[in-house]
Image (tube, rainbow, N blue to C red; front, side, top):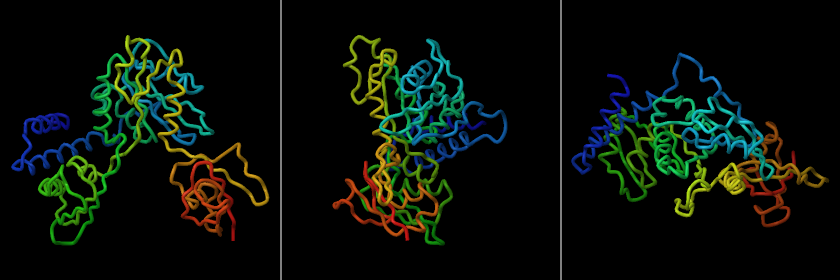
Length: 358
């Protein structure tokens, strides 16, 4: 029996198993087996043809992958957002490779990737889904496009991405698993667990062959999230959702809230989408200043929110941290203008920084 057949069999078994205290242990084992088979199915192939057209070199300050079903309007949108020339047509599978473009916004250069449309079964390799979703895994953000006439596409895309280990708009579960020499598995939690039991945790640990470990859970997780922790190959990526072709439906106000509404051909929603992409990437602008000179406010460094002075030093020059004495910072992150700070100081948008060397 092949991997896919085993998966179908286990998923069918899980679907017909009612969850109660008597079945908790069994459900944990079945879900663990499914995760292990899914990992085997999605592991990179060692042989065969290359994924030609998908090896795109990252450029710019961040990378956004456009994901959607065929003929949803990805190529048209890329052409509107960037100066790329992605072929667009009114039939499916126009794009057969990954086409990059650069969105310039608020001094940032954001790489946008137009990928071939995915179909149901993409996570299992259908329609080059393995390569397409693989690019999405390595991106900084995913832009999900859904036809306004067919909102059902949302669930299809989310299921395919989830099956490939992509967790959209989710935080990594706060769980620590430490191997110990003996004593079995000990489970401690700092918050009440309402979605998973100790029995389920033990069943998962046993299925993965972990018999001696200290488990500390600091968030109210599900069994699927606990398996994600053990698998340790999930990626947690921000996502934006947008409806395309909204000009073709009678009443756009009936569409679900929280989605950007686009009609790329006439430019509707493009500026709103640009702002949403920039905000979702949590990019900030930091200006540098030399002693005795004014700061250059025309070319900021584009970095992620939460960056420290030390991390910015590493970006500027590999030896700068070694020669660092202190920094002077002007801006929102300090009380005094300027203020002397150390390597651990967290910078804010539009801060100005001057490095003082030893």
